[in-house]
Length: 155
Image (cartoon, rainbow, N blue to C red; front, side, top):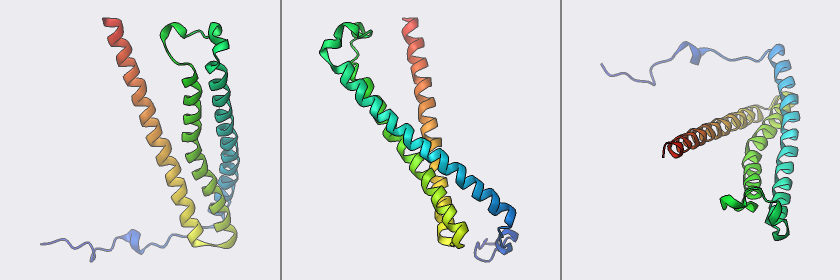
């Protein structure tokens, strides 16, 4: 017997999801906190970029050569500022997603706009997806650094 997905109707498909006043109050409070955190995130991103530029200028200056502690390692220290700038730009995207979520959910609740409600959760999904992938990448980098350190100590 062949299974036909179109003929199958689950209980959940027949269930209509409603949003009561308690859920609305939770979403309003959540939108306020996500708005606050996104503003702090924008400030943090701006701070990281400015610090990255300052580090690049200061450590890239040849007059500061005697004060550079890592000259012996051959690491171009102006690159440290570039790393701050790149990380600031990477952090920008989840902050924008969080900001858009808070803005859209606020609008959806005040205007009963289903499109904004859907869009808000799309942004929330994108925020957490980005954070999740970024976390996996960072953990992987830590594991690789630990392995290279262990291999270096063994030789």
